[in-house]
Image 1: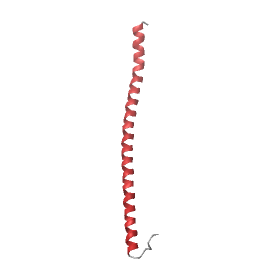
Image 2: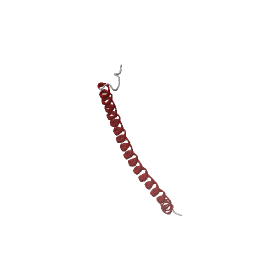
Image 3: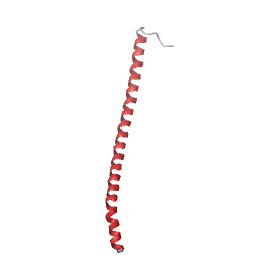
Image 4: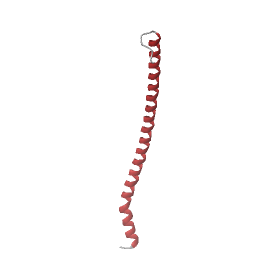
Length: 77
């Protein structure tokens, strides 16, 4: 076998491997985008939770103030 034939045979053997590696690389890139999207959604959920907790705290403070003002709840010391 001459050198050119040997090189062509090696190329023919390596081409499917190269294609598979390229496909795997594309899949990994897609997964990275999916993870970034999930992280974005998670950060949004965290922010919504924090807003909800703040709103609940405000509502509880308002309720306590009203109950204290009406004499239903003793004033906090």
